[in-house]
Image (cartoon, one colour):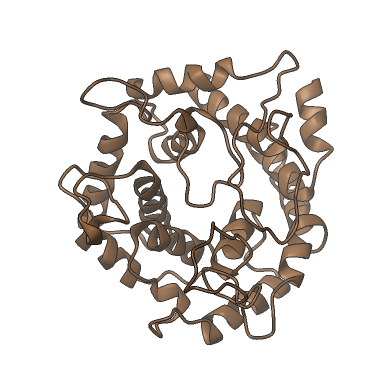
Length: 313
């Protein structure tokens, strides 16, 4: 085992089981045994323990209960929506009894401000995309966020959470969340031809821009899109875009090539990748304790997963 694999395998069970499955091709029973540990120890167990009896994390659905919504503030990542998103990323076993209890609490108790159940979603595309991913993962797939996304897809093929305030062109942030959610919903339910067509239009929106460039000028849309982040929350970056394409278009599309080589070039001399952009805001706990500019197991895992997909021939 090389140094990068040793580094990854010395991490939390949430990292180890994904390394075993995606990079080491470990036997399925060994992968399952490691995955089962996620809900019982480390980050997964700690996150599950943060949920209240009312189904909420930190007393709120999208923002924690202590936030004064009448006063402007930066994002906070401690409430229910982002905690559930993180449980999906950790790969916690959705059939684990502790996980089932947590999801039952959410289904029975958690409501958006308008009174709709959590898994019914809300209105913003970035929010509904993440809700679809969460619902599909935990066996709570609901069609209502799908209908909302279909109704809000823009003529250019993408989505923008500011469309209701006048935005007429898509945002990569909103688009990647919507695409992930639609694909995950399709995987869970079988999908429909209408949803697949919408998803393909959204993918073309990204691919026509090489996952990071303006179609009009060829310029990088935002330098932060070239910087690997984790957790991604609602933010877009090239690595997130490639992780999506790895799953949605396993046959590979040549328009991803520049983005892949960008990720490859960011490896350090030890075969690791660094955390390049932290999305600031309160968190329940710090998983890796890694500041910007130092190696990250999450970023390394995701980068190696993308390169393994791309380099397979």
